[in-house]
View 1 (cartoon, rainbow, N blue to C red):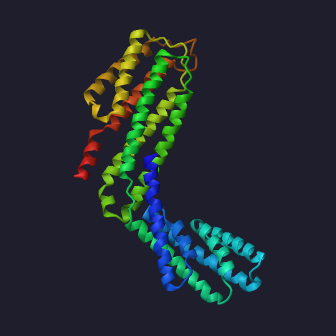
View 2 (tube, rainbow, N blue to C red; view 1 turned 90 degrees about the horizontal axis):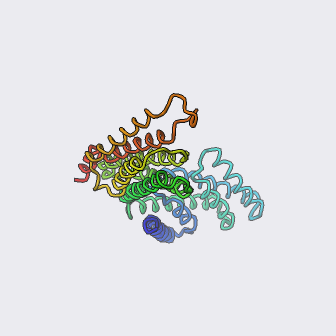
View 3 (cartoon, rainbow, N blue to C red; view 1 turned 90 degrees about the vertical axis):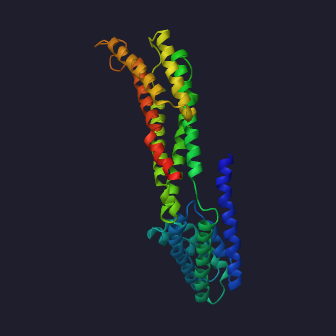
Length: 349
C-alpha cells in the first residue's frame, strides 16, 4: 500500500507542478490556460519516453479538434449541433488516423472551444495550438527533470515479495498434499492468481525502466541488472505455473510411507526457506536435497506397473507430484544463479 502511494504520489506532485507552470506561462502570454492545462494533465505518463511519444500524437490530434471546432462554429455558431459535429468529427478522424492516444484531449479541446470562441476564429485556432504546445512541452520537461522515473527499487522489492509468497505457498501446498489430502485448495488457487497479477505488474515496471534507456545514460549502464531481474521474474513465472499444476493433481490414493512423506516435506521446507530468505541459499545443500528427491522419483517410477488399473490413462499422483517438485528445484537453482548475481553486482560498483 505504501509503495503504491509513493509510486502514485510522485506522479501527482509532477502533475501539480506541470499545471502550475503551464498556467503561469499561458497567463504571461495572455492566453487562456484551460486547454494547456488539460494537455499537461494527460501528458504526464509513467515514463518520459511515453510522454514524448504520446505528446507527438496528442499535438496533431488537438489541432484536428481545434480545426473542427472553428469550422462548425463558423457554420452553425454556438449551438447543440456544433458540439455534436465537432466531437463526432474529431473522434472519427483521430480514429482513422490512428491518433488514439490523443483522442480524449482532442475531443475535450473541440467541445470546450465551442463555448469560448466568439470571433477571430483563425487567431483562436493558432492560440489553441500554442497552448497545446505549452502543455506538452512543460509536462514533458517536468516528467524528465522532477523525480525522474526510476523503478529499480520497486522491481527488486516486487521480485523479493513474489519469491517470499511463492515459498510460503509451496510449503503450504505440500503440507496439504502430504498430510491433509481432503483440504480445500481454493485459497491456494487464489494465491496463484495474485502471484500472476504481481508478476504482470513487475513485468510492466521492467518495461517502463528499459523504456527510459534512450534518455538516461544511467539506465543503459544498469542493463545487466535489468536482465537479471527479468530472468528471475521469468523463473518465478514458471514456478507459479508449476505450483498451479500441483493444485490440479488428484490427492486421493497417494501411497507414500510416513518416512517418504517426511523426506519430501523436509526438502520442500528447505526449498521454501530459500525462496523466503535468499541469504540462506546453499547450492551444495540444494543439490543434495534434489538428489534425494530424484532418487525417490526413480524408486516410485519402478513401482508403476505397465498397466495400472487405478490410473489407466494418467500418471500416478506420486509420479506427477515428484516431477513437479524436481522441476521447481531446478527453477529455484536457476533463480539463484551465481553468474547472474555477479553480473548485476558488477554494475552496481
